Amino acid sequence: MLGDKFRFRFTKSGTLRLVSHHDLMRCSERMLRRAAVPFKSTAGFHPTPRLVFALSLPLGVVGCDEVVELELTEPRDSDQLFSALNAQAPTGLVFTRVAPVPMKATARVRRVVYELPLPADRVADVEAAVAKLMAEPKVWVERLRPSPKRLNIRPYFRNVSVEKRPTPLAPLASCEGAPPWVPPATPSLKGRGSWCRMPLGEPRVLTRGWILTRFSTSICGSRRPVRPVRTSC
Image 1 (tube, rainbow, N blue to C red):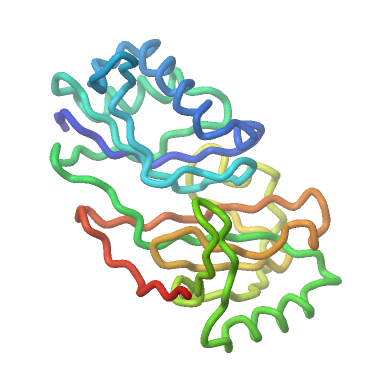
Image 2: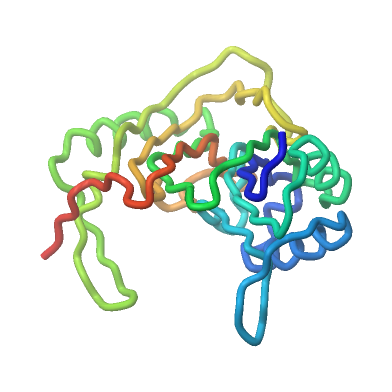
């Protein structure tokens, strides 16, 4: 299908999860040039491709269903573009779907789901902590930048739960090579948040080697997303 703006779904896993968002953008520009894609560039002294990620991935986090939009200077077939980019993509970056979208449409994140495997000896403690968290009417955190401020993050939590699955343990890069995603066998902490990233606590309390995964990213096409009410003091 022809189009001059496309929305891609992709996975970022393996050792590529240790590449920062800025480095991924520079890598993406080289990938577009190798694939001979007629991408549109920004204006100014340092033009860059009109390549917009709906939500950047924190360093070290595996992304299984990320969103990026690309604008072109001339129409291209979606299937040919999909094949060309996957052929030039580095190991760990796999485009899974593509669809043309109107030029004025912009993907806005409404919900994300994070998942983290848990050591068996800490499942009970985490279950108790999750139950306590979800029962709290307000959860206050201190934000230091750009200015000190107390924020109530409870409206951003849709659900946090500990789930157990009978399937075999997936490899380190569990979403490598596109869906279907194979869930881990060990109990896992799953959190669903509205619009923004969900803080899941301090990673150091868990056994080293477990990897946080952003399981899915839900978007809407409107320019003004529905946001939960923010409470601060």
